[in-house]
Image 1 (cartoon, each protein chain N blue to C red):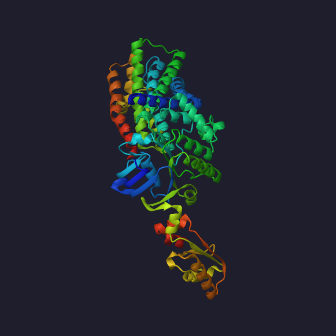
Image 2: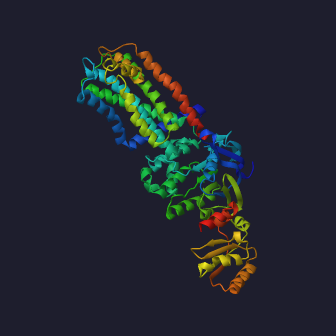
Image 3: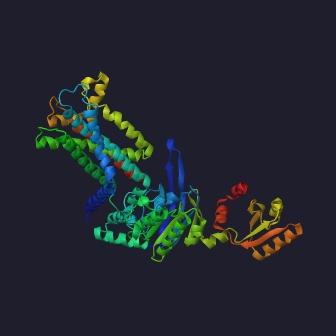
Length: 323
Length: 255
């Protein structure tokens, strides 16, 4: 058995529209996730993240390619996969009319735990997710954060080998988000492999060991957060000016090709990738002095994942136009 | 456990889920049971007397109302399945190691139980209003069987429509369309009282055949005989079409 909890090779999935037109949601996607790690799949809306999770969790068959989860093929051995996975979908997968405990007992029974173990497991999970006091209340009356925690509890009934979280914190307030993050962190020690999709770079930064950036149904970059940041050209230099009218002039002075420089007019901010930190800092300060431009701030920093993503998908242009 | 035992256990768990929902929403269950009673009282007393029906109207109307309430069950099934599909809870079921058909079997078992309850309530109210039947136990059970067979066919149409259309707006459309479908029948009036083309439509309606067969089995005076065959064949024909369609549609959610 390999060390990979998830292996995806050349997965393709096209949704057939009317008159035979199709949209490729997965366009030859490759992905490997090591056991007992948290892997974030990062990408904008429509990048194929949800389709990927649906394929991995046996809800959707890929048109072609090989997809193996917890040692079993998702198409040929769907049942074996289902025994080993937990799924937290984008929409709460709960019976809203039933109580929290009733929901967990229902899912426990469907996992064939038997009545007594299903009840015990429900109590355990309610306790663990801080829902003991509200187990009798109908889920429809839960807050967003509570509902998400119950949903997460429901996906952990059998302590799955692999857990899929599809945008687990979308739509939650900061407190609900923190609750879910804590819950995910507490899982990782137990040996569970977690694959989570997110639009929030901060979420990937906070939770994931490795990140795959997805765009148009393909992985455009893959690595640790640090590796990805380095791949973008490492550090960046930010220059904040006093006078927004000088932004264009200064953009030409920075030690980077003009099209790698981003301009944020509202904040009077220029940002450029640099390779040699100290040399770049000296050069920029010198160039500003020679041009007689007053800078409010000049600073070196690591790139954000936002910049990594925009850099890798070649969407820098669009951001500049929008700025 | 064998896979058959698992399939039965899962289906029973899914049925119990529905029963637990009743426990949570008793008012909704009562409304569902009271609605056909209301129709019975309204047409039996308020509007009063079907056109062309001679003699005891309650005796004529009751089998029709029983059949109509079975047919209207289509709505309830469709609403429940549509809700599940839109909530994402079906996704969780499908990602679990449970028997493939348990979601649909559980749904149909629960709906059939509710329909039996509905029949008991309607018959009970009619009895309280003075309705009596000469039917022996065999004929009586035969009538109940025909009614539940119609309900079973409607159930699978409901599941299929929910899986195909799957949107609350479509549920609304169906909720409106069941009315002309239900009323273009011999539930309330004898076909001889209708214009020719309407009478033909009403006679063809599967609800009419079930209603007529039940009247015959209940021994309603003046009831036409010879509808039992159609009352069996119509639902079976509908099932032969919609059962495989619905099952196929459910299996193809993964396409």
